Image (cartoon, rainbow, N blue to C red):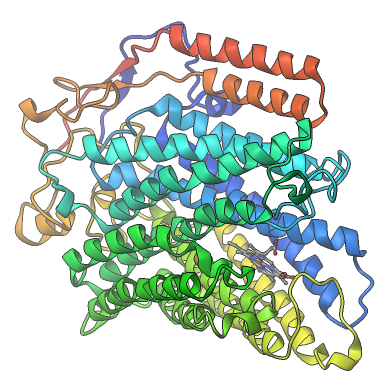
Length: 632
Ligand code: HEM
Ligand SMILES: [Cu+2]
């Protein structure tokens, strides 16, 4: 598809740079924001992985001396918190941002400046959290930060304050982007695309965003109460003051279990894009997939007590939550059958992406099965707080999140960069990651059953835990090598990878109908979607390319941005530095809170006010991008 020269028609007193640092600071383009999320998320993932290696080095043999007990607690807490909030969620947000608007045939998200704000708030939260290492010590109460261990009496340092403010700041960003994605999907789909024509990944984005919308507020409420306990001496979580420590557990897990699905649904979405493409078959059982996602999203809010079976809420409560938890395996099983049936009889191409997708099926099934064991409330007290649980949730978290993200990365990399990856190298790194992963985490189940408690920084040689711990640590290095090989593959692809072309995989969906990498406006003409797997439809039984939607349909997509212009001019949102200013204000104010400095907090709030008013009064009429030639 040849696109003519572009020229700016209307310009404003606004940042206009298209390259360089400043252009990234002010960008509102969903693709650039997606790249920022992916790059930052990968950087935090590497930090979390280094923390994991430190944990494994410390536990490699009994009586290890790599980390002191207190440092171990900090490294463990930061590993979990980083992996969940600063690596997994942002990497997912990166794919949501980059791919979802293109998959539904839109030119951007509904609120591009809010989208930039989400990214800057995530970055701010990550910086706040990690700066704790240099400013008095990291939080050490675990990723679920149980009160009253995290209260002022037992965690007097500042570590927990970094946790509370870092996660609240990044949490605002997460909430904003959830709203943004929901509005985008409901309003900006290409002409002709009904909800039931949407690619599975768009469904996954929609449901994940809905879960975020309802799951994050209870956690935020808990964090605000804990802040009151720590700053103002209230007693929400202090039993001697009439408070209740179980209250924190409820608030946390009412968020924490849906969080599992906030991570898992995007994984399901990616797998559901990769498998049909490389099986050369449409997704099997599309309607049942939508129903299953709906059921999982609803049920995810009704199972949180399975994290609290040993609290003593009573046999009736425990039984009820054991039943709801097991019920989730039904819709999940439906999805498993969907994926297997899609591959069944298909013309399979075993690309690196499909390797990761199949790896996901294997590993995620094992994690799901050990989950059913955990959910048996009578058995749970034996397993709770042992390495069995650590094995279980890493099978789900790495099998679910990391494997599917890597499947998505290998699948969409050519679209994002315009370059192919080295497939042979890709498959080698897959096997290293897959074998290393199982070497680390399968022994965890055995260790757990042998009685190794989780969250211990060392163990005695007489316990008979040494061999499997040594195996796990060796596995961590195998997996680490695989990840490094992948990183090498990515870098060399950027430098000297083969050009990918628009459609290297014979893709089903709209992203493959536009150039790689896509132009700022994505679609020169909004495409007319005539059914599911829209691009395949045109390639198999249409004219071979997407047809532009009729003129009068343009602009009906709603929202002020990215809608089809008239003629060949495309209306684009203007860049803005206000989102970054707002995030800066919240960051400064957070440090004011952490260090109990009213002055710093007021300076932060002043920057925040400046950012918000600047945002409101900013000239945001956007600009017109004129395409000289028509594109067909
Ligand atoms: C890259 C390889 C990884 C290794 C070798 C690894 C290893 C470990 C180990 C040994 C623990 C300590 C368990 C304990 O003492 O309770 C742990 C905890 C944890 N990991 Fe990982 N992990 C890895 C990746 C991940 C990923 C990708 C995620 C999430 C997406 C994750 C989430 C967590 C969480 C939430 C905890 C619990 C922290 C806590 O108890 O506060 N890990 N990990
Ligand atoms: Cu759960």
